[in-house]
Image 1 (cartoon, one colour):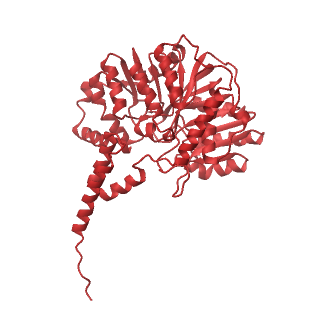
Image 2 (cartoon, one colour):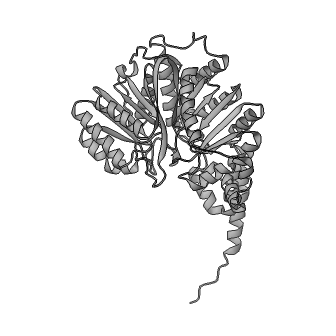
Image 3 (cartoon, helix red, strand yellow):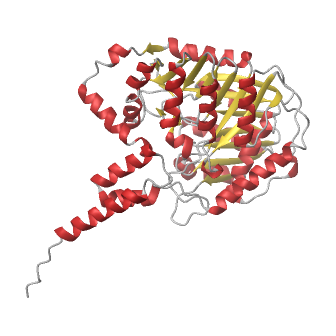
Length: 477
């Protein structure tokens, strides 16, 4: 018996155009024009795969439970700070008005007030931050809190794991948080060893069909935080992974080692993430830990993430760029800005601010790097200086404004870090600290080359095409 012939081409064509037209109406809602453009281009060329991908990762949807937990944590942070010793910077009249505005904005965005009395050591490079961290871990007496996006099952990861196991063996309480995607190998291979030694280990934002804490698999916790004995903290760009985990492209990092009242703020960020994943309420002494003055630096912590309902770090950085009077220096591995950030950078350069971008010559993410390069001609034409770091892969993420404000943290200058990832930054105020950080930036500049507009304009046509096509997907990278 012969089955009747069915013509599927017309129904398929109708379904594709139905998807295109429907998404043309739906996608631009509550979305920037650039993000809508990227998704609509994908859906126009690949309607059915495009709409499936959009259903998975197209909307930054956060479950109500996660938002409620973030609000609860924010209320607790604001309440606890009123019960700590008066180390606020509200009477620091020596700060310029633009810096005072940054202090107030950061507190409004991320809940933490600025504190005096901090000692902050800048640790550039790669091996030095790891060695300093291991020395402090080996000296820990009471507690170790460690949170990383990437904790790799390699020589560096095994070395840190051994130190943690040794600390647990002498009675130190160790808590470890690893991102479920970035640290999947360590969660599989190292975490069982740590748990067997009595160390508490949890995956951040575990991936699965029925997850409680997040609705999209690409919403990641990208933070890097260590707090030791509630008195010493580390944060910055470096993960627990070998320098050359990408062969032939060693990472250049920047980490800060902190003592003083601002350590408590990093402790709060860690404990909030711990609570989100475990429902374990921190002990009172962990929340109300008091610090004495350890140095002269005024500092505060700025966490960010989709749970806040706003892009904390981006808002602060744009404000600093518009407030700048003389110079802004930004070092970042990925520069794929949205329109407001790009406009702020270009406007600053055009009004005479010395805008300096320090970027890697080579990258570990090819398509993202092409998208980044697509902005170079526009930036150079506006007067922005672009310095390309050649000695490996520049993974450090920091910024200074007018030699008065410094920002160091885990945040890349791209749409993913600003909108999707949980990040953390340290803000430090005053010319002494900014001068130290600018010295590191100058070392990056001397270790590379400055991009020339005339030379860049002569790049091959094929490269221009790849860069411009990659730029169309900026919201998907």
